Length: 65
Image 1 (cartoon, rainbow, N blue to C red):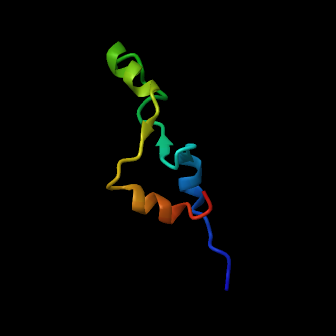
Image 2: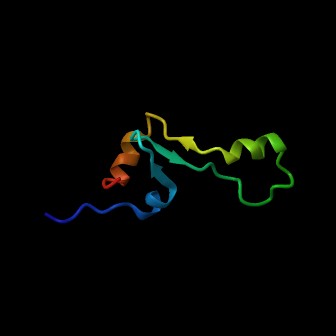
């Protein structure tokens, strides 16, 4: 049997937590920050957790954790 390949694009975007969930960074936080409100920029700093509806797809992309 061949080895199961990890999707490298997904591996760069998602990290597995100790409890088995996956966290990710929100988009739109890297440039053109002058027109974004302080409240919006502050909320973009916080890491998010993958929802249960997308968990199956993320697990398939990252079979090795």
